[in-house]
Image (cartoon, helix red, strand yellow):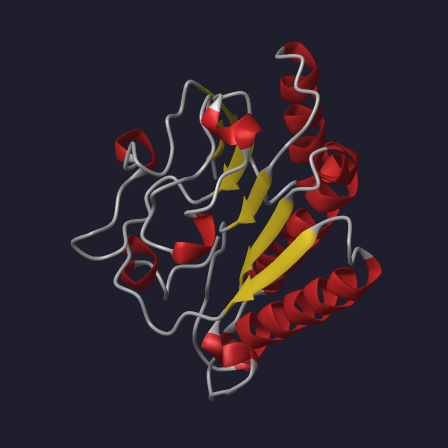
Length: 205
């Protein structure tokens, strides 16, 4: 499960979300950095992009690394080495967008798939945030967690997936209070989105 993490030479701006329209002088000078954790095959409908095709208005992926987020400790070491190698002093934006899903009755779900869900959807974002928080605080930057509507509107056959997203919500909301005035923390709850993830939803890791 190779999952790319991008370090663009220019941080987000002029994207589709008004949140990212405002830039400070550092951003306009092009000296900021951002990391986006995302599944390599994910596309979001017609307007979406695979990592290699990211909209240049949102990201200019000058450098990137690949890490297996189903192994959070190893992935964190990879990302930390990447930051050190490229002498990143601060990170303006960290987007936790990677995720996997298995939908079906709990009793039919193999335990390894449950472990993978928890690792990718919950443990990896927590461990990466823990490691990269000093970089983000240095920039007074932003953390964005992509959760899911099922974290607040549970549905049958989504038990473990819903649990990981609800736990991620709790982590992000607590962190928002803890980091108030130092780092901005946002949680996004999208509904069903047309990506390759749904085509693989019955496959176990």
